[in-house]
Length: 451
Length: 96
Image (tube, rainbow over all chains, first blue to last red; front, side):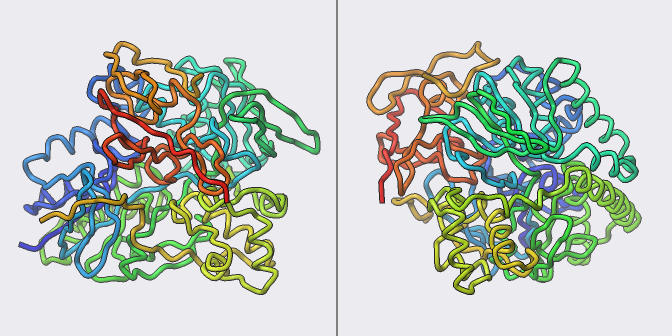
């Protein structure tokens, strides 16, 4: 029987596994986390007490459905949690699990590796107490903790309001929400946001709830600096030319999400520029086929569309995989999923308009801002390399090590592209994309090799 | 001093461990990151300026929460469950 492997047990990977199992296959589902659900539907440890509606709010039913789907499949699939994929080549994944390296062979591979926060650094962003928005949410959802006693949320995107709301609701002291997008942008985006009225309503609800509970929400507000000695003590921000300071001991910030595309890159998938995501993404057809035969893409790892779309894309890509194997599928279902996905794509364009990318970030970034937190490379060092005539991000990396550290550019890569593009006065797509290098996540010394 | 504040899920058994040789405790179900940051303010020193770092992404991507264990293992604190008796050592980092 041919080996079908899925990487990532979030909404896309779980729905893909379910679809493959329903057609008689026994896929292998590899996931880095100890429990399936992905980041969006991340589960708390087994001994935690909070009910699903407290953990996932309006999404509780969806989260539970995804979890139950995975749990109910345990006999039909080869589920391998706590397994990190650190390389992919020639029909093999290289894995690390419990300090042991191993390989997983595949004939067909479905990549559903999800996303991380898109970070635009500000001075002081490496101080203890400063986290990504996703991190702040994980601390609360999966560990019952707040990242500080008095927390500020900044950046933009739907997650900004959601996490601020979740914190305040859980009893944390939320001092302010600093949204970089102007109110006018959100009004102008309304027609497209109405493509998904329920999602829009939830966003408006979080926002209204915060205001009703006396939490300051500032729009068109730019985070300027985080200050503190050993940890964050205050944030400086500005709006309409006036500067403000806010004492706090926790800050969570991000500007939407970025896709995890390293495995597709290692496998030689073609990439194309996505203006909507402001990133190079692995090319795929409407069903989720990459440019490499036998490699399929689904979920936020192939382009940010959110959890609902991830479930649909996982199922759609699995149907394509089955069809390519010569297995009869319900073609009507495939078309239906593609139509639903196209609708969400329209909504996604609306979100991008409502929370526009802060194009002025790069020109305002000071030379001494630490851009790369692993290698501790400043914006000024990157600008110097550009001044020497290098604009390809891999060349810039070779010269000054930006994006070369432990995180492989996951945290600084998007920002580095913006700094290079601004310094070179070219559009961001001309800067290129950081090439993935194995191991895509660090391997500790002393790992054992699986016999 | 602590960086993180526990808001909920407080009714869990205490789990003893050591942090740089000092006896401390977390709660069953904590990650190492949670256990350390609810009794201390950082996890490691950075590689080129020995600045205090306390993780950043909490999802295994940023690699800024590596700690050393008494048995010689190096692990990401955000992705490693706390176990009783763990000896957690924080790397002081280096100045270039």
